[in-house]
Image 1: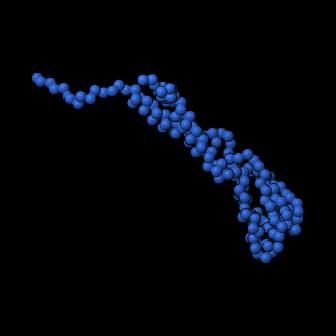
Image 2: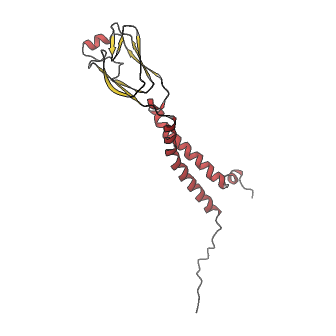
Image 3: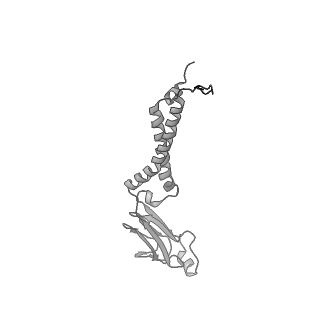
Length: 183
């Protein structure tokens, strides 16, 4: 009977080590990078411009004590990000150090971490939260990948090699009898 080529390929000890290591590190990558991509964590992406739109009629709503429907309570950014405020209202607005005339835009770059509530004119509470966190470095992301990947790779390799050795061990004689000695 001819052996299956896939079976011969998997019978190699080198393959029994390399494949689990690769699978373990792939799982580590998914575990370390997946959640950050899934929740759109700003510290895990390149610097970008985040746009905040002040819709038309916001000034009237705020004067009446109402909230503008499209304006959040705050934004979460990472160092190096730019906040672009686009004022589509008919009145000028203010956000922290920025004065945004009606129909115009203003930009604010965040080179450092900050967690603050800036005074603003487009929310009823007159404040807007801005949280800027430090962007993860490539080294930090690599360490997270290793911390997640090494245990997976190690465990899968140990199990795979153990199974390889258990398949390679010679069959035991199954007589079940014990030798008796007489003196």
